[in-house]
Length: 512
Image (tube, rainbow, N blue to C red; front, side, top):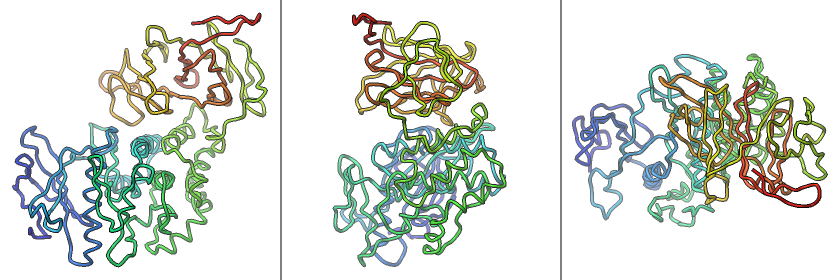
């Protein structure tokens, strides 16, 4: 077997392609090298598993989670998730796990970690915090969509790729990620052995030879249910992401106790601790309440969708909105019974009525909602073209066939590049949930932003939050509809496929 202290020597080649150039760091059960892809002449990261003397159960569990990380990364394609290029074993008898030394090759990140950024530069401005948080939230949302909970969110696991003056954040280290049981989790394997099904590996639930569970988390960043050894879900990642957002805003970790019991006890008072940490900053109240809500002790009382949490954080800090987002209403839509009607062009009050929901019908021209103008853009010949920001941004929207149970929309930039907020600009992106898109011009110049809202089905309508109001659009006349909002003082459009429009005499006609 290779020596645990030096699984690779500098200059060694693996897979006849990747050469070890420099030793970077030692992890808990791994050694990390800067490598070079000799075929493509690019830098890579070589991460090699290492066994240490001690409990063989712990060693085996660590082995399984190292292998699992490679397979988890291979299933994820979000631009803010670390990309994996290759996987293999250094040496040993393939028939005996104990002689096999796995490694994986991933992209090399040259911009350090989030913990290094805060240590070197201190607290970050709100705009940068939001940019990083949304990027991580979107990466997590993809993982959650395939049943993977990260479970180890911390500043050391957010890496940066330096692109000029911009740092592109990437979520890394899925070594202790957890597959949800309804995604075919491997916990049923009594010995906690790695299960390879459907072409990927899933580690058992940190069981060791003694029968005790192995604590695999970072005490300063873990949700209380993790500290208590309970089942975790997506809201555990939301909790940790909220702690990281506070860390970026203040330059300090909320919880610093190495003692698990003490950390668990303090998490019961998280609301007052978070309040005190943020009080000197003078942040918008909506932002403070959102972060307090995301660090609630009970998992079911936190935001359940991590990408919605990221968008809510952006809205809470958005100067155009004045931080007026009411966090408590994020996931609670008003009922639609006996909705008051609102004809096209009827002025809407600045603040919504008690229920805050109005029905809007398709009409030519613009519709006045919450003191703003919005227009209806029908999908014809398979797409709808919408101009925004005074014509500086032209986008083409195409509704895609529903294959996942959620509306999917293809957004193509006709005069600019588009990117999910904090991500890498491209000619087009695909959206299947609410998303903030950055619009980028030549030379990486910022053109603006557009918020895409998919809407929520309710009582034969699709409901959207528009400023201080909720707007309901009937599915009969708009079977498919989304909202593209370029921001306060700019254009907004409901993109829709035409349905049936009722006539006063009871006759029905197609419209569009």
